[in-house]
Each structure stands twice: as structure tokens, then as C-alpha cells.
Length: 162
Image (cartoon, rainbow, N blue to C red; front, side, top):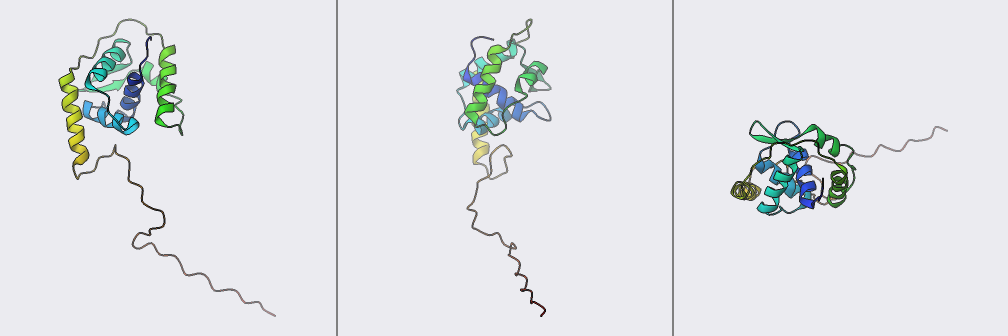
């Protein structure tokens, strides 16, 4: 598959993260991309990436959402566990460059307006007080103890028997 763009690899990672149990809707894919990279690519780049990856048979549309095809799942297996986002994107790009698509596949037709509304919905959900599972937890300082978390009293020293 030539040429391979960064947004293609990011989109595959985002679909992998967001569609573990069921096909992911666009807002979930946007949230996963934001979690992976910290920013969301532009609508036009995402439209092109969806079109490119679906034409090569890597992303398919199911039940109103998007999932990875079996070929894309093979590409996504074996990702480094402790790698940062840039290393993962480069790893996926290498595998995409070596991928040889077979046959023609139906393209996923998304518009920039659909993606724009999904991005706006994601930004609105970020600011909402509810719980978003795709957003990482805020880390607190390690010295602060939570209520109810006390240290045990030390055991008394043993006395020797003489």
C-alpha cells in the first residue's frame, strides 16, 4: 500500500482501541485518536484516510460502526506494549508499507461534515462532568494518602529469653 500517511496508522490504532467489543461509531474513534496522539487530525485528512483504508480492505462498516478487517487485525497484532504513541504509529506505518492489498473493496463514504460534528461532540463530551472511559486518569502525587488508608502499627519487638 503506497503511499502511507501518519493519519492512516493513527486511524488504524484508533479503530483498534475503540472497537474491541463492538463496531465503533465515529465519536469513539475520534476520542481514541485524541487519546493516542493528544490531538485530532483535520476532517479532510480523516475523510481521505477512511477512504484509503477502506479501499484497501482494512476498515469495514458494520452495524452503523466501523471495525478492522481480518487483514488489518493481522497488521495490528504484535504491537510493542511499552512503546509511546510515535513508536506505535511508526510500527504500523512499516507494516502498512509492506501490505499488498488484494482485490477491490467497497469504500467507506464519509463527509467532512459528519466528521466535524463528531469532533465537536467529542470536545463537548470532554468538558462534560460525566465519565469518559477513553480519557486517561489524572495522576495524583504519591505522598497523599486516601481516607481510610492508614499504616499498621508496628509489631512489638521480640524479647530474648535468657
